[in-house]
Image (tube, rainbow, N blue to C red; front, side, top):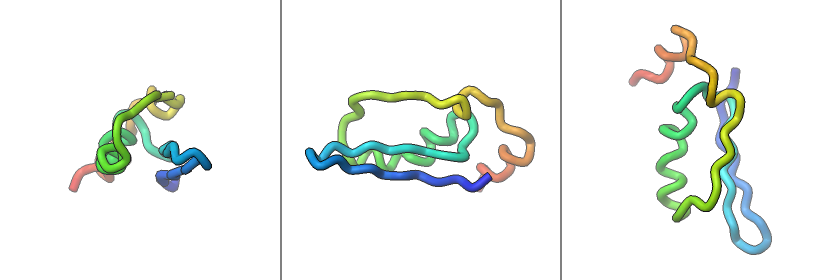
Length: 64
């Protein structure tokens, strides 16, 4: 599955990050630098993908 991070900026200037294709906590690890750059988190909605356990192949992809 392709992984992506979408940044949506509203007309009022609020930014929203949406991660796709990440399993477990890897979405947080990957998007951390963007959250820090954008400021304080106001809300968080976890997807079903967050609650999945990574497969062996996905775990290996996350390692440097």
